[in-house]
Amino acid sequence: MFSAGLPRRFLSCRQFHTCLVRCAGADAAFHYKLRGKGRQFIDLVRVVSKGGNGGDGCVSFHREKFLAKGPPNGGNGGRGGSVIIRACADETTLRHLGRVCTAKRGQNGMGGGRHGTTGADLIVKVPVGTVVRERVVQSRQQDEEEEQEHEEALEDRWVFFPREEQRDLPAGKVDFFKQAQRTMVQEDKYLRWRARHEDSSLIHADLTEPDQEIVVCRGGAGGYGNPHFLTNENRSPKFATRGRKGETREFELELKTIADIGLVGMPNAGKSTLLGAISNAHPKQADYAFTTLHPFVGTVDFADMYQLTVADIPGLIEGAHRNIGLGHAFLRHVERAKILVYVVDLSSESPWENLQTLQNELEAYRPGLTKRQSLIVANKADQVRRAKDNLERLQAQVNDIPIVTVSARYEKNILKLTSTMRKMVEQVRKEEEEAKRLEELEKEDGL
Image: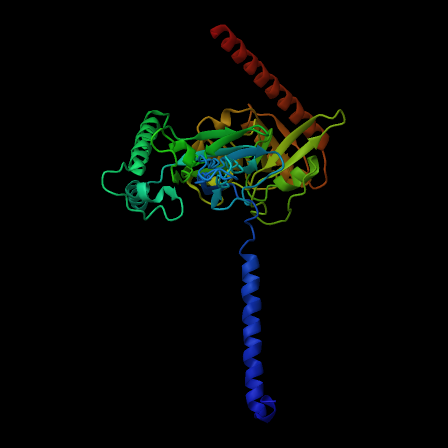
């Protein structure tokens, strides 16, 4: 009705403004979607975990017919839940974790002597191969909060019967509440003494097996109901305590992919194509560098039901040990590989120099990493003109590492490669089993 009498020029301006707003909103939504590109795989997060607070105690008295003043029957509060980190084979990334993980609070006590239930534990599922490290973060604000808690503990800790908190005692009468306060002060002193003498080392755990778990934060104890303060003199205590707070800690979770074989190579060397040719994985494949932005793990299945896992690591460039390129974002995933497979491009100008660069970067990142059992895969052998000459020169310069020539694009010589990989993995697994057996025997002899 109002717009019908307005000039046509005004309506067109308003429509133009509406169009601009819609375009801006669409552009913002587009950039919001792009913001998550490449972040589907997260292997390093910092998490604050908090155990659940304990439930409050209850102030209650038994009441029934012909019994006007029954005994106290308030229940204790339930203990708070704990935070548990568990390794799960179904998880592959740490993306689902939030910044704060808090367990459930314990239930408050109830009348009739009913204690509160324990709060549910928070189970944080992480991929197998996650390293859990506790961080020391002690800020001034935390120190001030702790001091304030000690000062106000006597006031904020208590739960009173209705109209009992503001009650004034006559002169000469015993103050049972002050006696209860002194009892709780002695308990606080004991808990602080126990905390000082307990093992205060930082938590550092490596979850390398499925269903392996660790308790990182325990819940607070529940409060006492009023029967806890019953004495021969005080037959009707009208106060109870609140639950204690749970533990609060900060952790750093780092995922290191566990695989039998790790594919290491320069960008655009054909690692993703090779992984797709030998396993059931389907990584992104393209003819430009840094196609792979995060590790892919594929499983190689054999006819006799034997399996081995192969990890495709993002491309490595010179200076990666100084965090150049993708840097440490992928180098941490090489540490757990039992066998290193160097994928070199035979069609490049100098594949032997690329191999030397890969070995130098791995050795600079972690000394001794290149001493593991290794294999060289000479990829792109289908380009015959340059590949033949480069292969002869590569074989002349490398004598201590076996070389297998393949064409991942056309799946040539793949059977020989997988057979060689299997023999190497079987040998490494046999050596690990033998080492474990010797350790068990040593432990038995020590006992």
